[in-house]
Length: 519
Image (tube, rainbow, N blue to C red; front, side):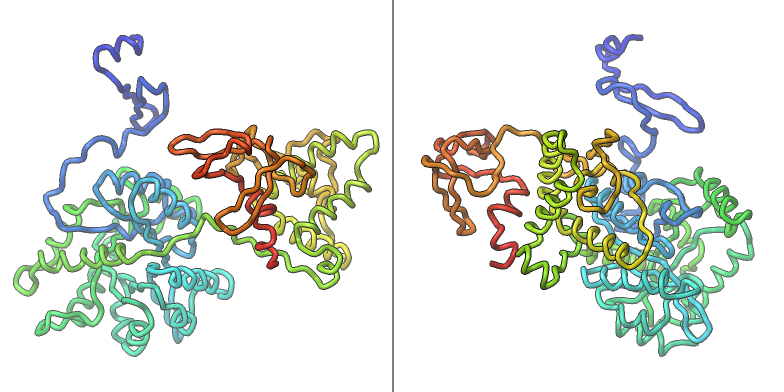
């Protein structure tokens, strides 16, 4: 049937099978492969206990977990969760993707990490969840200790104790016997970390041996670490079920991934998926008798701690900042050039005079001006100088350097700086492969670009909010926000209250130049 006819009858979506899944698309938006999961209104759970899933393992835990980060987030939203936490083993690769996906979905990201603590010849699994920016920096240091400094991918106790501030630690589900033998270590960790918990994970395995091991450890914990008289735990339990695939019918994926990695599937389970609160409650209810334990109170207690961690998770990557280090000029360079911006432009001119064919200077100049504007606007001058310094130092010291590879070959500025040895114009290579203007928020506009000092007998004098005074030729065309509208006006048409929309290059290299270089 024609889409117009279906729409007229009130039918807005088409659903169809493809492979092992069902997909849908909107007739108003056109064809698309949207998997038919986590859409519409979910049947509400019977249990109303607030809970946050902190046990997600993503595909960044290579050949062990599956489910795109955005898919995990979509399911969390569909299930009514307000936050989502990940805990990949020995990698933090998914943490930025988690932050972006959660921000887009309007829920809170919880940055977590699973690793192995090594102490006096014994090893125990722990999970670490960031609470503050300090905690995130400490967790990054723990990641380095595990993946760079340690030969066996473990973190030693002294290093762990140095990195506790701003983080929460959770002892793994098989740790109770180790904890009992190392109570002094547990105390030291409790003194260092913001909070410490024990992971309760009742997911079932296909092998009875593994189930018995987990249940025995959990029973030992609740028998040893609980003070019935005071209703308190030496280490509080928390409900964190490790999830390696979003849905139960995805369990086979983990088996396949494990076999690709090692030739065998280890710790197989059909139960390590993103469960709802009713499923968790059923598992807890089945294992805790009503004589010694108030099962509902214990369940709410373990769930409450997940919410506490999520509510305290303020750590996040500051994506609005450029973390590339500034180029450190030598005394000779500072005397010769004054600042890094001047040094960058001067080095380009030197390369231009040496490498550009005399009969094509206009063509090369047009391309270079475009590249300089984009590099300035994206604050990449120091980045270019760091590469320049690195490559030239290597060449001076007899270290082989390649002629250039990948998208760098399309950058004329890199060629003129001597970083690459490939002339991009000669080979018709695109600068946009190296740095796409639109990705940096640069779009074509008719507004005048600031270019420094110009001679003008008719100008408009403006005092900016930072105290800077700027002179504009009366015919300079400026983008401004006037009331609710964004318009373009000539400088002599400006009104009081107009908000001039300078681009990033103007702010970095013209208006705030003196402030940027400490003058």
